[in-house]
Image (cartoon, rainbow, N blue to C red; front, top):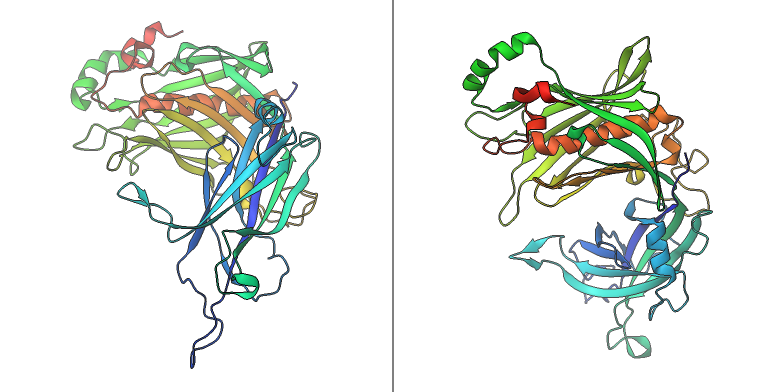
Length: 438
């Protein structure tokens, strides 16, 4: 299997240094002009803006850089993104192959009030990033203080000191295997490995719905009793090209409407087990996925809530690895990304590497670090053919990749399983039509 080139651009080690007003008579020294929290918005080229808190330090503090700290933003660049930056010079990045990182600093709390941002803009800055060679080796693209905003009047040299922001920007190669379903998971599709414009078959999926003659005899009565507010028994088995099963996603907890509603609630989610072959026809659990329907707030639609726990051998409890939401109407991405769990290194070795400065002897997730995987998920009622990206470091054999493919299928099917029970499902997803499954 050949991977596709990807690059991660990581921004972190934030610190905001602001001028300290001269103390008034009788007042204590070192009073900060702003007691409000501050945050920054970070944007790389055309990619979505990300927001992070910016810790404040006094302007008369030592000029050295703050110690390595938390990750503030992570941008994942595909080969197409890198090519876009390479052919698009800008005012701030005149050389081809460079990208523009824009940061805006705000005072106040993150969020909006009546649709208007609640923060007060303190200043902006732009950093040019040279991404040439970023696919081959890690590099520190920026590390240090930059001025944000304009100098005020009345200070030395005709103006007071401007606010300054310290940040570190790193680029790291992050190659990934890419897979694409050639149909909806419930239609038992093939899964293709993708590299550029080339596609080749890698796996086949078989959707199933557990049933037996007793269930068929009692199904009418069960439906009347449950008023159609239960979805259960779904599974997806992933086979390699020889026909051997290499991964399985099995619905182990039914998706049931909460009493008095037509939705699956967070307090009673449906659940899947993702299993891998254990030899002699047996399976062993690898991960557990829970999903529910999250009610939307004012002016927003519902979303699919999910939680994924890794079942690590030798650990007597499930290890949480992801807890987030996907818009039910628009869809989005399911992601397992542990990049933010480690400090951001300033050196040339990634902090999430065993050779980095972090001590991972007690790391509970084994070899799972950094970007693990992502899968596209379409919104309700849309044709969904998931695209799956898996970090190269997490694939040692085809069975490793198959487990992530099975997980992607389970997430995609959960969008249907969490659909309002007042809406009908397609026939492939109804156990009433289980005898026509492919």
